[in-house]
Every structure is written in structure tokens, then in C-alpha cells.
Image 1 (cartoon, rainbow, N blue to C red):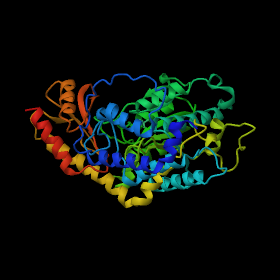
Image 2: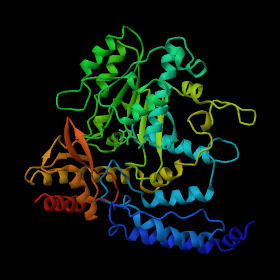
Image 3: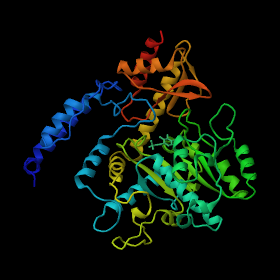
Image 4: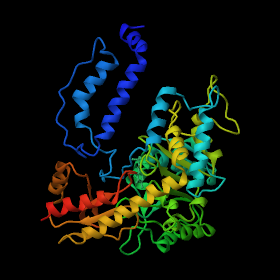
Length: 456
Ligand SMILES: *Cc1c(COP(=O)(O)O)cnc(C)c1O
């Protein structure tokens, strides 16, 4: 063993304690840390020939890199859709590293069974049915990829083609229909060999991002009985609009299609009594994507994918080798997702669900919704600011009477908050997305005060 490793092993408790103390100071200082600094350039260092040990690495990290890290774990990072990390999720993350389980298979460890339990809890929390099984993946993009890959296999089955064996070329053209699909859907279609152009946009309702179900019916009818994939959106990024899943489901009586629902963060509407109706019908989707590093407030990276067609999933992802266990009735995770070896991502979710339960997570969700409504109401008192859509859930989408890129810079430079720009119906706009467990209404007020000052 190299002398640095031997020294670290001997000193392990003190080194972990020092790391823990530093982490505690970072979290205690979260409120003072600039939310999204423009990072100063860090001069390159050369590959260390002789290591500095953990204490040396910690010192180097603190000196060189930590100052430029964002406050994205804190309550006022409102860019994209960015959750934080609950105390229990952080504890779970530390233990994930400490135990370093390979949750790819079920032999020699109960780690995979913990993942099964966590997936079943999440399934219940999102109102899915007992016929939905699932697995952890790295994010909603991968969850969408897995759902669409299973849908691709299903289409093949309808046409007498085994896509997993014969490849996409044997499949012929595939039509994917969606109202306001997330960019990751296009990326997934590219990766799956279906092509970004496979997605045919369907009209949305007037002044909405939700799909016009009559237009969807028309598009399906034009396929003359050819099976398609429909991507329904449960929570669009700009205005958090929801497709009418029940209405889409009734189209199944007339047309054959695979229903994939991208509920990356909108799925959490199921936890709010006033909003659960928005995801009514989710239980009947063929595949469902829910992100966890957003609104569940577990650290990056974690999402879950659900499907009611595990047999097709195994056809796509099975990984047979002489040294690996064969596919069984309870398939190992390396037969279910793109990864082979994989970290026990479920442990962070297991910890936070065990620690706070549905009730605790419901309050995270309703708290974010309340904060978004509060900011939305206050913003309308600033002259020239206009909400581009009603606040439907946890995002405020608004236009401002000034140049957006310079305002985004000024907001970031203030250190107070971070908002991301977008374009909604051709209009440059800003988004404020709430999903952090620490956010209080006072944070919404601070954002409002800042914008009022910057727009004065
Ligand atoms: C965030 C998001 C994604 C992509 O999620 P990643 O975790 O970044 O891969 C996909 N769909 C929707 C609706 C999202 O909000």
C-alpha cells in the first residue's frame, strides 16, 4: 500500500471528522454563499505525482475549487428545476459511498432489495398501480430514454420485429407524438436511433402548453392503425402545464399507442391535495419518468423510471454473460437499465422517505407551490413585469421591461438568487422555479425585493 494510503487508513476517523466538520460549515454558510457566482478561472494544476493525502486534498479543494461552487443546495437557487438535499438524503448519500454497493444484481447483498422497496414506496407516493415496476437511473433524461426504449420494443412487437435483435433499421418509420416535449425527449430519440425528426409536434390548447387532445386524436387517426408513441407531459418547464392524461387514455380505445409520461417534476403534484388531479391517469401509463434530484430533494444524481411492461424492458436491456446470473422472474438491475455496475442511488431516497414520510415531502411540495404563488403575486406589482402564464404549480414565468441577459447577470452578481432565461411563445422571459426544501416565503420576498431594485 502506498504510504499516503496507509497513513490515511490509519487516520481514517480523524479525516472523516475533518470532512464532516467542513461539510457542516459549508451548509451553515449556505445563506451567505453567493447563489450563483461567476466563477473566477482556476489556474490548472498538474497531475499529482505524489499524493497529498486526504487532508491535503481537502485543503486543495477548499483553496482552489470550493470558492467558485454555487449555492444550488440553498433556498434561492431558482434556475432550471433544482432541488436541494434533505438532511436524511445527505446522510444516505454519505453511506452510499461508505458501503459502496454495486446495486447491479441481487447476489451477496440486500442492496438491490432496498432499491426494490424504495421503488415500491415511490410508486405508491406517485399514485401508480401495483403493475408498475421500476428502477433507479441517473436523471429524467435517462428515465425518458428507458421508457422510450421500451416503447420502441413494443412498437416492434406490434409489427413482428424484435428491435433488440434486429435493430431499428428493421422497424421502419416510427411516429412519436407530443405537445410540448422536453428537450431530453429529442435527445433520447437521437440516442435510440429513432431520430429527433420522429417527433411530430401536436398542437397545444390556445395559450397553453398542454396538448390539444382533439388534435392528437386527429394525428393518431392519420396513422391508419400504425402504432405510435405518445409522450404526454406532466409539468412543462416554462409554465408547468399538464396534458389531460384521462382524455389521452380514452384515445386508446380507438388507436394503438404506447403512452410515456414525462412527469420529471410535475409528478410531485400527486402529493398536493389541491393539485393531485393534474396527474390523474398516471397509473395507466405504459412508462413514467420521475426525477428525484429535483423535487424529492435528494442529491445528484437520481431519477426513477416506471413501466408496466417489464418483460419488454428485459428484452431491451438484458445483459447475458457466463459470469452473470441469468434473467430470472425478478430480474437483476443490469437487465433493466443502460448501466451494468451502478451505485445504490436508492439509498438517498430511502433515507429521506424514511425520515420524513409522505407528510414531510408533501410539505416540501406545497411549500414550493406557495412560494411560487407569492412571488408571482408580488411580481405583478413591479411596473412592466408580466406573468406569461398563471402560476400553475412551482414555476413563475414572466417577462421584464429590460434586456434579459444583462438582468440575468445582475441577478447572479447580487448573490441573492439565480434565475434562468427562457423563450415562451416567442417572448424572451425569465423563470423562477421553486423546489428546495429550505425555501420559505421570505425567500420569495427577497427575490421580489431584488427584482424591484434592479428594475427600478
Ligand atoms: C429536468 C427535466 C428533464 C431532464 O432531467 P435531467 O434529470 O436533467 O436529466 C426531463 N423532463 C422534464 C420535464 C424535466 O423537467
